[in-house]
Length: 215
Image (cartoon, rainbow, N blue to C red):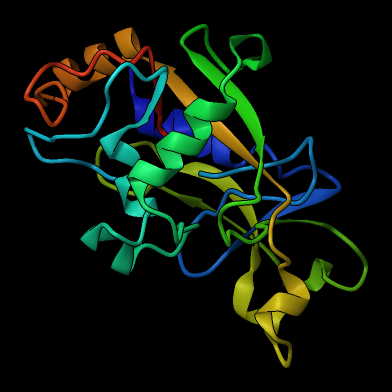
């Protein structure tokens, strides 16, 4: 099973006849102000990675570390980057976690959880397609690396959207975040398939949080 192409498809779910994501260069973004179309959206890690957890239901998976500005890999990432620490992000998410609010994803091991974005500065990255902006739409087949299959993606060109405008005029701060979760079992399977060691806690123990935020 190839995880990356499927995740890339997930990031495109907001693209339809009425909505499309915004891109700058080859980046996908994943937050929105609409309750039903929130996105947030990941880092290929080294063989051994330590993450913080202790009796948590949800942790940020190392695949998603580049979406936090405390991580060096965020410097070259053009998607959504959060201004809060991973520790703070996990704290807020776990405080608000209610298993009854989990929504089904594209597979049994994938779930979505929607939370109010009152603790980050993440901006919307999905916009309705209108007569005024449809000329900014672009599409192409693209793969993020040599191990994934190219997929057809449609997106807004960010530079065209911002032409002569301030970013805050076009992309307001998102009202909601859609966190994409993978089950611990699936993360372990995929790490093994990709030759990666299982993530560990600060205490050096195997990560046991039942859910990992992958986007």
